Length: 231
Image (cartoon, rainbow, N blue to C red; front, side, top):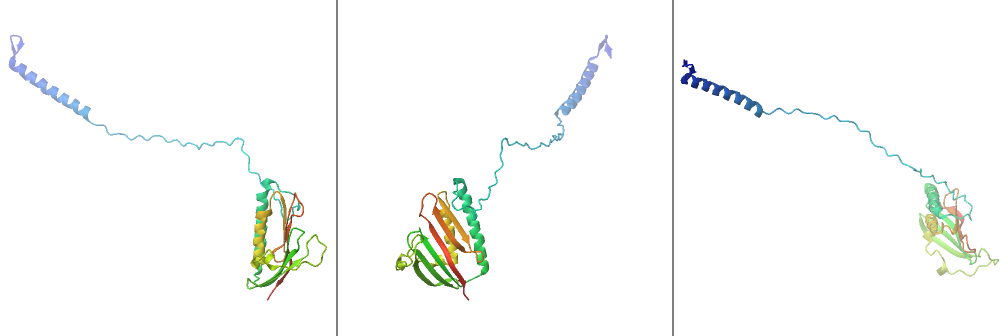
């Protein structure tokens, strides 16, 4: 009610109280909206497939293929170069292994083998006759033969204590294969000529020679003069 054109105090207070309540409600709603959390939205990043990086090799050279030396048929006095020594040894080792397999396939346990050895052409050569039974040395005969560069027919009386091969196991067929391998290590080099000839039927080293390419009369010679199977 207006009192003298003015709002009465009682109505004024009611109006004021209503406005206060309205203000409080609005404020509460605004505060609640501002304080609420928004649910996170999962965002999946686009995954791009990256091609692997290929770095080109510039100036690359393929590994050259070694040309076989064919050591078994190579000219005897044709010297090896430093770069050929390892290859030549590997070829000889393969040939030794192949022929050793041929021998083992024969399965021979008893045999006789005769061999001569000349250490340089001048001193008398040594002759060995070895009898093997059941893969064990049963008998050894030792004698001397004339030197390769001498005219005498009768060699001096042999002294068994001076023979080169005091252990006859080194002159059995397995021993000859080991002798061949050792000789490859010792004599296949730039300064020496070297050759092994294998028996075509049994595979054992039948003849083995090495000589100096630079100097004369410095050779070594091994020859199997006879082989016989025993029952």
